[in-house]
Image (cartoon, rainbow, N blue to C red; front, side):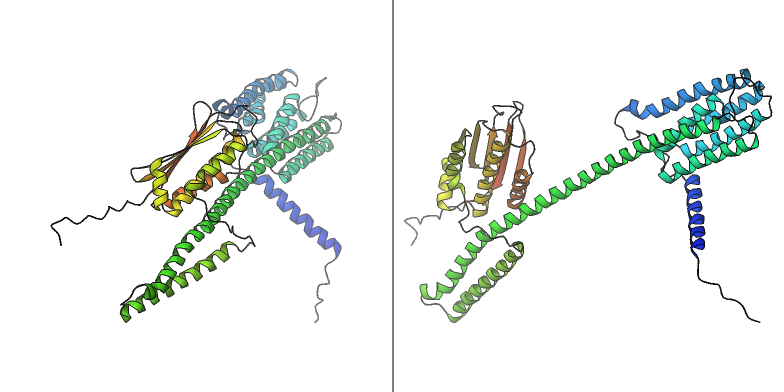
Length: 450
């Protein structure tokens, strides 16, 4: 006995399989809502907007229940009890449109079908339509609008097809009673569903655009932070490399400058010089990683507090009225080398970024720069007045590099930064950078001491 093996699939089999799959997906979409049961405008900050969907569905129910009863009893001659039951089934589910429009559609759809069958058993009344009554058509359109605004495209298409199939079935049952009401609901329902779906897709596009802008802004802020940290690291490399070079030169030349050193001391200086050279090599490798994008570092020496006057003068020549107040104790500390080079560089960059922000956002504003030392801190204060021509900044918004760079520099030195607008429309930048404790002067020997 031989069995015949199944032949290769035909195009008809493929079409049949695709049709079954689409029907399963359609049934799935009609039985499972595509959104959580949260009403529209639930995230609005205003209370009246959050309450608006509830007020709308409550008003619809309050209107359609009595109107449906009146139409069924007055125009179609339905008894009061049956008319009340049909009205509750066709209009009361409108209360669910704010949360569960798909479940509301199932109830209204079944109630409308039941109402059509009830009316089919009644004598035909002149001037009436069948299979759907006027209140049923209008209420059903509101249900379709809620579905278009909340559900997926597949669900909307399934609802429209189910509506058309029900209307066609009723027309075939009683073609003499059908006078175009089913076709009217089908056409109006398509229009309402398209409008609702268009509004929903537009809202979804706007929401995704806002989310993308938020993500882009966060990425831009992170990129700005990394760029500023890289820039600061490059500058600090030059500062640290200078000190390490000095240590290397001093350790290498110590045996020649200091006489009478023991072999242990010479070996110690040699070890210090080797460690310093190795640290310099490691720092150069680190800097090559930071400059992996092909950028080249600045060859000029890093600026300090001694160049603040030149910076302010250049800003004045650019058209910004600015003045500098550099305390005498700060000048003396700089000349003696009591201010660490990293603190000098940070203070200079903070003033530079502050002046650049004034030029960009408040052109022509009078600006005052003050640098003072006291209580173990270097205080940098930059205050500008309101712009002379309000509403005409060179940049409507900044890239964020200025304030981000200031915060990173202050954090690096362990200081504090305070920035913010002033009541008169100006802006204030205040930074406190810690200074190392000053070394006490060596005590002089008294005449009695040998």
